[in-house]
Length: 144
Image (cartoon, rainbow, N blue to C red; front, side, top):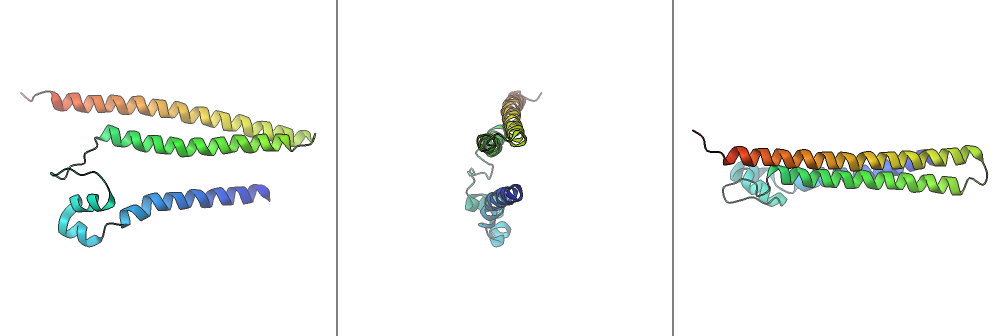
């Protein structure tokens, strides 16, 4: 019963966050702006940094780094909460071996998940860095 309640609350909180960031922000730009002013005006209305030529001011690598950082932060928070919940289960077990075992498994799962997220973030950072370097170096070489 408590598990279902926790999962429901976590699902609702995650859904609200995703809907707010993914759906509400782009809807701030009206459809008329897209038709009349193109994507430059739409991007400015939503809050993206757009240059005078209509190109984004952030490069691909920089933008993807920001997205990876945000995703890693959200997932890290989830696994930290899972670890804390496991500690709470263990502390409140009152000698019940089944609850102690469940608490330990939650802590171990949370720490493994956190390790995977941190490692994945590092791998993503290196990949984004090298993709950024490859695109900068490719655009810097003159065409013959």
